[in-house]
Length: 168
Image 1 (tube, rainbow, N blue to C red):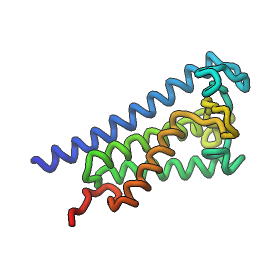
Image 2: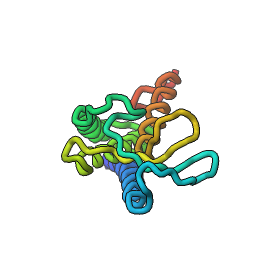
Image 3: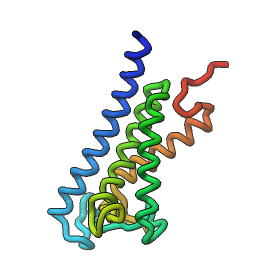
Image 4: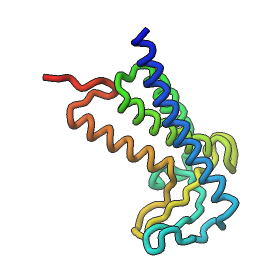
């Protein structure tokens, strides 16, 4: 009984984090669609961050221009793998990380499935612009990049993905 409660708790952390990131990402995108003019930057934090609505048909950092359908397939497989992986996670930390990653992947996947120009080839809505020579990005991109970076750090520290750290 205790094992099933622990498993349910980890799955709830994963699901809760995924839904939070997904809801935040989609809310902001839909809000900015009705308040911003595409390609016309608005200062958010003057001199540091602009909001600039763009429609991206490539992957993060504009890699793979014009190959949206490939990223749709990759994102779908990644989302399904994260859901499957959620049943095997042994720690709350990895559950939270998997949930944030799942929310980010699904945020951009929803755009690819539902936005113009059509199903599975839709453009991802990006809007965060920093003054450096850097691609415009969104909350989902931040979630994906942050969790991938934290995962690498944890692995380099000796953690196994989804498992409790072994004590020597």
